[in-house]
Amino acid sequence: MIAGIYTLVILGGISYTMERTLNDYHLTVVEFLGIYVILAVSLALTNSFTGLFSLGHPAFMAIGAYISAILTFPPIRKAIMMPALPHFLANMQLPFCLAVIIGGVIAALSAFIIGFPVLRLRGHYLAVATIGFMIIVQVLITNMNSLTRGPLGINGIYPYTDIWWVYIWVVVTVYTVWRVLNSRFGRAMLAIREDEIAAESLGISLTYFKLFPLVLGAFFAGVAGGLWAHLVTAITPSSFSLPLAFLLVVMLVIGGKSITGAIIGALLIGIVSELLRPLEMATQMYGLTQIVTAIGLLAILIKKPGGIAGSKEINLVSLYKSLKVLR
Amino acid sequence: MSFLSIGYILQQVANGFILGSIYSLVAIGFSMIFSIIGLINFSHGDILMLGAFSALAFITALHGPIWVVFGMVGVVGFLIGIAIERVAFRPIRSAPQVTGFITSLAISSLIENFGILVLTAQPRSFNIPDYLNGLLNVGAVSFRVIDAIIVALSTTIVISLYMYTKYTRMGMAMRATAQNIDASRLMGINVNRVIMIAFAIGSSLAAIAGLMWGAKFGQISPLMGFLPGLKAFVAAVIGGIRDIRGAVLGGYVLGFSEVLFVGLLPPDMSGYRDAFVFTLLIVILLIKPEGMLGREEEVIK
Image (cartoon, rainbow over the protein chains, first blue to last red):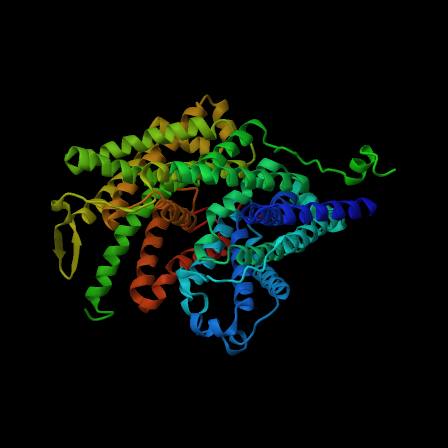
């Protein structure tokens, strides 16, 4: 408990200092890193802890991003840009926080609907089915011109996302996932990962405990999508496609099968791609970032398949004790 | 042309046949690799892309007969298949299935982005010699010479490959390895070689399909392989991924249903074609995961 409060305060302090000292560009980078952390940690629920290899995260992000963007958009501009919106949506403008949560809830709902049939599939069949789901969502968004402006995407979204919203959602995500992992839910998920048949014979409902991490993960993916939309201020259907899913998977593989691992992976990949981007621009070598991440991934898979952190977690209490902050 | 006339429908059937021939070739590769080492090779579509670009290079550089180009592209695909297997998939062979899938994602990203780096993401037009563009008319149906070549070549390849797996020593070794890899090893089959050949043949077919794809649609780009690759996987699943015949059947079923979906439904629905294909995948995986020709298989526990 005290360790938790310390961490909150320290992270808050860091955020405050960054808000005061960093320029806009660096602050945006930090906010992106935070969003990556939310995405990686929430994807870890299915991919690392339950052993369900899902690539559908960008689809949930897209749902969250579009819903929240439509909800925060000023009604005057909606009338011009999205004429086919139902009346109640067209005249509605919600506060950012609420819009993001609704985006997350609807993403979670879609995960619930798609999860029921798809989660019966095993291994990489599930992976391909989730890619299929991602493409379905993308095609729908691209073709529903009058709701989503199709391939043009929505631009001019108000940049509500600041470091404090990111801070709050990172904390909420990590805390929730941590609590889930250390509850009977988490133990059931881990049991399913290790051996489905054994888990089922111990009375663990496979349907329920596979659906739960997918739905919860989708909620946070939707939230992250909302934050993302209000950070980059322009979204198109192609923003949420396979390269992004691949990037998230790389984070988890490189980091390892733990919350700590997911965070390390997210920060590492995020920082590397931010560092490489200017180089890519300067040398006109587009695609360099993806090549470097892919080679990094292959190296990790061959040399250190457990990832950097393995399945180890940082224990905050013992960390503070060793630093003599706590007794 | 009147909608739903016999001629129109026959034309659509012909189109479905052409598209199906291409999907079949790509799907065979998925099927061979999957049935032997249980890997969904996500980079398969990108080999199609490499095949298309090398075909374009050969056509522009050589001005030779199209048969030679087909042959050379096949050889290129063969070598790429061997290289990918050696560098990426052999080191992780003992790892869990999902690791193989992630590896193939990485290879796919690698190939695509090298493509963007070297060739830029800009699509290029794929020009084939004029005599291949000439129109043939059979009754109410018309198609280009190249379309006829695509169908004929694809059918020939499929039949000879089937003969190959059925009657040659290597083919028998492949089927044995697909049934039980450990027992095959004990029987003195060089499993590593079998896997390598499976990758090589599969990739070679994908590369040839790349040439066909370019010739049919007239445009190629470094990212072109993603959708055909994924759809060919869908085709393999529809037909039964463990069997070459299933993959071929699935390829044609997918080709036909895609063309009919676009041809028979109102035009504003055609944008939803890909959504339809992947909904079909999810539905098939749920009601008949072993595919049309497949036997019981552990897709769903």
